[in-house]
Length: 100
Ligand SMILES: [Zn+2]
Image (cartoon, rainbow, N blue to C red):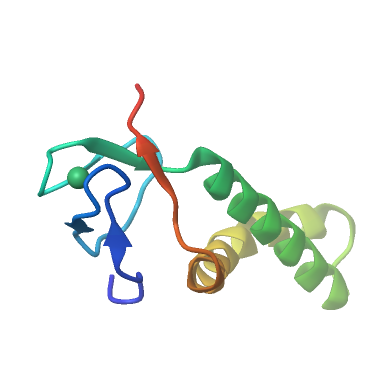
């Protein structure tokens, strides 16, 4: 994906492939072969933000009760993509050594 900022390896400062970062999938540094993962704390934070935004958005559309839950579930992913975009523009993604 094109919208990722340039990422640097925390160990050798080499440039990492401009690729999508997924939880549970290591990213291999092309310079030093370190296995990296995006900071889980940052991913959790984006997930929570997306959930709050999806809830507020559904609520402001007048959706209530059971439909609110359904709307949040449906909206959560597109909102998460949007939030990740904004979040990783404002906050540089942090990487740490990959753990199983
Ligand atoms: Zn490296």
